[in-house]
Amino acid sequence: MAILDRFRLSGRVAVVTGGAGPLLGSSITAALAEAGATVVTASRSLERNQQFAEALQARGHDAHAMQVDIASVRSIDQLHRQVLQRFGRIDVLVNNAVARSGHAGGFLDQTPDRLAAVAAGDFQGLFRICQRFIADMAQQRRGSIINIASIYGVVANDPTIYSGTGMVQPPSYNFVKAGMINFTRYLATYYGRHGVRANCISPGGYREDQPRAFVERYESRVPLGRMLGHDDIQGAVVFLASDASSYVTGLNLFVDGGWTCL
Image (cartoon, rainbow, N blue to C red; front, side, top):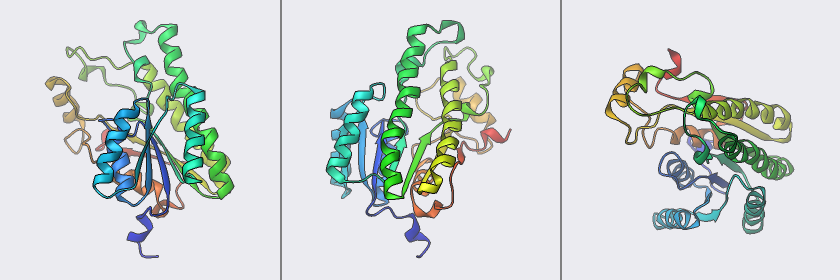
């Protein structure tokens, strides 16, 4: 097979949680669709997913919208049934959605209710969605799970870049992303012999509308001199979803401009 053909995803069915999100989700979904996959974008807002799927369809891609709340086992089970009933298979699962409502405040601001909200989505939800879809992948002897982690699952925050900006990095985010990375390795070792690969991508800080002081401090520490852009994660996702990475599993791939080198 020609090398560029190994990156193509024609005939594959991919599910992306949080797939219509304005940060990484929409970039991930678009990349998989452009590579030829049948893509399902799924999150709590069915309307937003439908709008994004229609935009991709208008560009000639095979995109579909479904609804899921990663904090609800029942909702995850329903998504699983819908995907299998409609497409009969699952080849790529990208766990991108984050229970953002719980990730807020500094360490001393954390409450049991806030931590429970985080655990319901980013712990229980991650486990459940992987349980449901990995069984199908193992049965068909083929599949790729891609978990979107973070550099903050590997290295600690630098408090100085947040100073005076009003921004606070919640400790729960570091906690769940670190767990996600090692959980991915667990899946890789236990399901590799069933033809299922599991890998992580750990992006660096994404440029949105942060205070200027934060952006300048952050970018001064990045060897490539800038924050993550909208398209920077796309190549990594297609690589890990495709046959181009057929001998890659258990990897945590940094897409951080070199932040973790320092």
